[in-house]
Image (cartoon, rainbow, N blue to C red; front, side):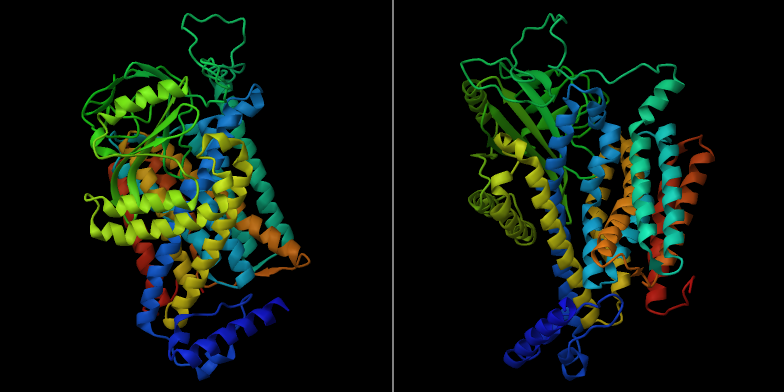
Length: 616
């Protein structure tokens, strides 16, 4: 009934469009349902053929959907996950604090932020009958392993790049197991319910392996009783400290009669004579953007920027440093774009540098928390003298805040016309839709951090919607340009589009001397892609339709799985041969990128029948 009603609705829409606007029917495409070509009568032969020009325009729309997915992850999905991780990190219970460790959170909880678009693309494709969904997942696997690891090695400041042996070995074994299970499940081109359940169950085993990896490392090093230390502010009352207690909540002692608040683990520092807690928030969905442990920071706010000591003096703006802080030796005020005045003594400084494909290459938030609102205002006055052209404003979670941000961007003389049209306006459109529904649970407002489950759920709904739009765009491209199948679009265009922010984040991490973390997150995300992004939608869809088998006769998928095997073997070979065990050289990075280019060329040749496929 759903299928029939849907096709009737689509048919009526096309008939109305064609009757009133000649040729407009060619602007839309119709999906295929469960492998059967389900095309309305108006498209079956009576309507004019699709237009190549219109098909090319749909590439612009699908790029907009990529940007929408990324913005949803960056503005709501990942921040909600980070709040959860922070709450676990500050927990009094040891086994809960383990979930706040960077390695555990990055490979498990934060993997949701990385794999969200792929998961929802696969889920929506099952209900719409698109061939692009599973292709997005397989294509992302290959892209992550070759491009993300390859680029991370190429830009690493120190080579050969040493990998962490135990986590790398664990992720390689888990990824190999996931490929074997996936190949067995897809071998007969049908996914049975028990096969999807086995894959999903394997996700639980992988999470357990990640959770207990630290215990294994401690045991091998003879430190079996070592546990994660309590975060700042959670130590027992019997412990003595020589430092003055000027903190409140978990961090500051209340002054001036203000209400206590919960503050995340931050770094204590003094800025313009005001003692503050500093939280460095890195914007990128491949890793947890919060520093894993507290430490004392030496900061010096000058008229040119904010300096920190004992860091690399050769870099003006960076996200990583030798001591592990996300801040570099100087955050130049020339890169300070916004100063956001929040409630409860909080100021956020937004530093941005560089844009590629609509994505900020370097973007961090310096979150300063003063003991009282009065001290916050005093600090704000000092910042205003050095902020230059930075936009100083309060945070508004409603559409009004989005409109204010647009008008400021359009009036900014430093922003080019190209960016105003192709970045600022699309961002406003997406941000307005999100704020209309999520302003009540926007956890960027620190007074609403307890609403993180609702923010997480709302972001998931929007990710599902944008994933559906992306798949419909792929169908429309295929309708207007029939020579480009949706399976090819999924395994190449959509896969690159959804994984591009991950690649940018990985390159930045590598440039800041933390490439091993980027590679570990790429491998962990690949494992979770199979165990979650593929298995969970299959379980949901099969259970929703009486546990029936799911046909997966999508062109190129089995060959894609073979590419997954080959690329993993290639990475393992590079790790085992010189320059050393668990080390990668720059040459290997270039080879991995070249292999991905070869993969794309071979896939294109098979799609456009330049040569026969490697696998039938």
